[in-house]
Length: 460
Image (cartoon, rainbow, N blue to C red; front, side):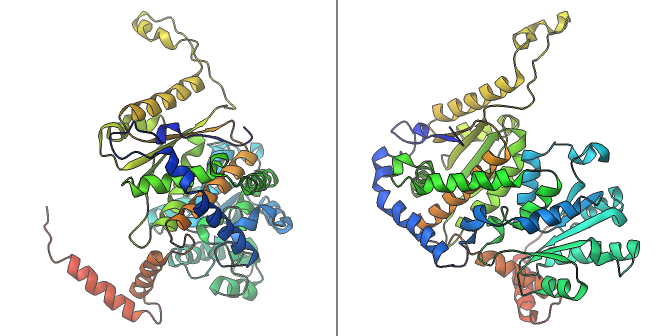
């Protein structure tokens, strides 16, 4: 097992209380998956919009390292972005950096403290300034269009604070812009001020951008080995590209099972890793799944879960609730920090002696097995993914694997997994409310709709 093992026996057969997936149905999707894979590969060759993420494992990284190392001159880095311009960064930090990285003394850390300003809740944005010296802080601002309202609002706020602290002439020296190569307000800002800038490849959408400069620059600053990250992604790409028979390709199987269970009424996708280090991986996947597949009246609702915490908050629903979910449990088999549970000489705790000298990581593994068994016993479909360890290489492989699975599933559903028309409508309404030129009509439409939904109300 170089990267992962997919165990899918718990999602096929006749054991379910609801509609079952016959293993023969998997094999019947062989031709459609071949076509979907060919569609992806041709999309790269033809340079079609949305397909650029497939090239990211093989990119040149000189400028990424240059600017990542430049960030090491600062005590703090604030990445300003939202959605795909933030979730991937948080995922990489959560998986590959100490969980209390920012609290480690500066002289012991591998790089600057790292913060993300994504939402436009003023409490969150102001709170970052409560813990950083803005004069010793660099800003990474990420927006492909250069016009994302939330990102630009936060950028204006933080950049103004920089100007107050270091002066208007010096503030651009603290800024790295990551945006479109030639268009948008951020590209114009970079040209006018001479601040550092990098490009988001034209064919790469936000939710597929973590392996571009969007995610990699801050990773370099925190000491993450991005060469191994990209190497892992490339290895998985090559493995998947060499396996053209469904039962020999775990990504094809996973995509097919999502599609088949969806057709049988299971439109909720529960991803439940048993590792704190994958908590933000699930957040990243939720956007990837929802924005890619939620179209034309179709799609999965992604549910974020974390084992074993959510055994105590959600598994009751999973086992005895409606049969509308496909479950995927992820186990990381090896931990870097084993803990043996100590025995204590306290008579009042004698009944806990069954825990003494047991390994805590093994307990977490048993918890994962117990949840999978309980879900399966309840007659619900459950998948199991094993990862030997979490490293830059294996995480890069997992990122590419799940991006590929989602793209294939979109093709099976006959939708475009790379656009996001529903998001764009909300953006237009927001621009209208905020008074952006050319969006007055959208404001009027949104106000009319909001008035309609407010026709009935009650106060307490």
